[in-house]
Image (cartoon, rainbow, N blue to C red):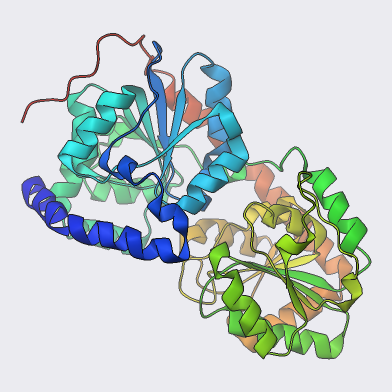
Length: 442
């Protein structure tokens, strides 16, 4: 079956290049480093083997942050390569880790690209965040004797049903995996249904509970507070997707009728959409500006000369959402009114921001179940309920503190995943690099 899969990939290769080119009109990063998609990675001439970690995009990169920092500390002599699939994921990784980590795009799962990539990088171990199953890549790692781990692994019900349609290919791909650090018992059972070996599975928990606040959190939030802290009514719409912003703007208009000083920070999941959201906001009659207009060059901080005149700020840069959570008392998390699976609520709670979410949270179902049971989040499934939830939380500081305290208890109960993941990774000793890795024949 893998031969059919590979043939289909080769047939789709021209379409893949066209897709890169087309997406590059909106986000030029898709056109940069395109040779890496074919396995061309330069600069790996170290004697120590690389640790290679793959994280698809922004969410996976942020979840991987505690693990990346721990690996850098434990293996200081080994270069660490972090691959992503999206430019926003790469940009986020560079913001988080700087020059301590090397970066590349994951090669397409074609035999020649995979062989070229592994011959260049020659990793001592491979770590894939969450659930990315690439048959050619995984088989080449197995045949090359390179230990491979799935970390923070999960399977939604939809993913399970999709993989079951190609179960022979899925089973043979999972047979290449050395260890799977699953987020939950449910995830473990689903991997077993797909053919994963039970002795390869470990219940590690969710690394997202391990993430801390940035080192400059207090400093950056302080600069925001000096410019905007006098606004009592303020909220964040974080990681929004197309189709959600009209609802968010309608809700904000409702809040403005109740309190003309209310300020909204609108943070689209993809910052390249900022211009269209400014236009949409202006059409709705909002006084709106871009966040980048407040940035002080070279300082990474913000200043606003006339904050009282603003009703809405569209955030057009990456990496500031956590600081806005530290500034505003309440946030709505996007990707949950539209069926995108939701986004991570833990970062907002850690920053001291009460959370409101829509009903579509499949990507974080167990996290939201725990938070909902503890009374740590508010759920809203349409414009009216979202407006009511935000108005209630903005007007009730005691309720916000109650939810934050409940959220902190959930966070405390679920920590420990990092130690369990590191324990799983420890048995695969990183040997010193010898002769160049030779791709298997065939």
